[in-house]
Amino acid sequence: MVTTTQLIPALAKVLLYSLGSVFPIENIYSATKIGKESCFERIVSRFGTNITYVVIGDGRDEEHAASQHNMPFWRISSHSDLLALHQALEYEYL
Image 1 (cartoon, rainbow, N blue to C red):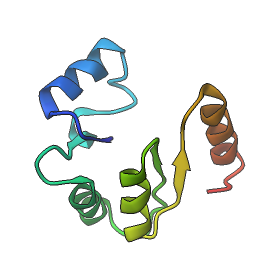
Image 2 (image 1 turned 135 degrees about the horizontal axis):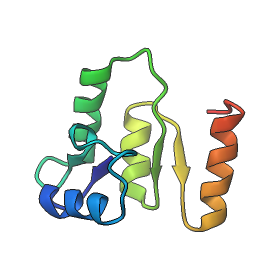
Image 3 (image 1 turned 180 degrees about the vertical axis):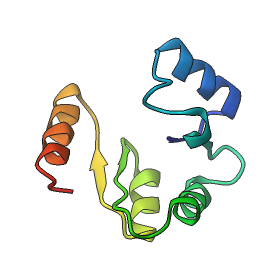
Image 4 (image 1 turned 30 degrees about the vertical axis):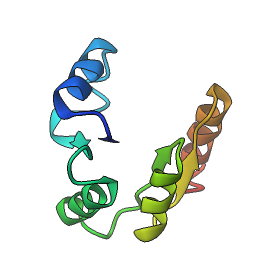
């Protein structure tokens, strides 16, 4: 997870919404001070290039950062977008 929220509030939200099993603490990155592109670079450095990363977001900055790293971008603006993403992942479209 890459967020523009500061790290402690982001961690609190993850715990508050019981998403700790989905987003382990070591996989949460705050772009508040370094920017999303730098976070993406850190993620690729950590996990390597033999993985397909999918950037999920609702803004232009996520889309721009995804394109800078040649990562597919999936725009989320409603619940149906999440359902479509789930189906795309299930059928290995991405």
